[in-house]
Length: 298
Ligand code: 5GW
Ligand code: MN
Image (cartoon, rainbow, N blue to C red; front, side):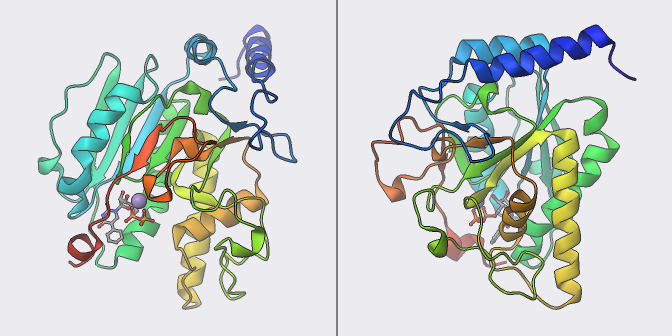
């Protein structure tokens, strides 16, 4: 159903208000805006209260998708969800969509008001690269059959991480990408884009190197991103190629062709393996430890 003109005008004004209150000058040590005028969100640039109020008024509601297949379920899911209850989009309606091969083993977490958890069974692919890449297809299907009818925004997360600080509605936008902690200060030639011309993910150069551990946007945009990445992954399979960093390579290609409208600084996904830095003023989400030797054998 179309929105009435008054509603549409209100939305437009509210969207613009959001950006007027962002202070791009408040951080001189980092890049706060892209060449296509999308803000890059760093601590100190925004008034948290403003975003909380604005998204409440707009009626924003968020789905967080997360996959916990095989041993990743016991290793990470509980800590991820418990920490998310403390920091992720507090004040807005949030639904967790947990995709797993063993629904009965999903931990029972006590959720805050207007927060729900839905468990969806998926098969366990034998190759880990496929677990990672099939997320695109499954997210797209779930948006189409369910999410689009009930929520405004979708955020997709890796499970091997823990929230340690506010991850609030300032992160919501039409199309949201995250700067990879390992590359946000790297020159273009050191970024690990897929440089194989046979792959659909091939790119010569890019704007930034984005991390596939967090991406989001309106359901419309996340649907289009996941559809496009899945299509390219399948085309690569037909041609017997696999992109260097799997779904992340395809995600980077997508955001090169379809610029994100909002970018999250590495404060939104950091690892102390990279140490402590003056420009990372707050840790909002941290990588959990990797147990490759035990988790990646199946
Ligand atoms: C297992 C072995 C190797 C790579 C991935 C997996 C794996 C990933 C798995 O067995 N089960 C699973 O649920 N996943 C999902 O895919 C998790 O949500 C995980 O966070 C995501 C991406 O895989 P990661 O986190 O191992 O990838 P990187 O790029 O963070 O190393
Ligand atoms: Mn991960």
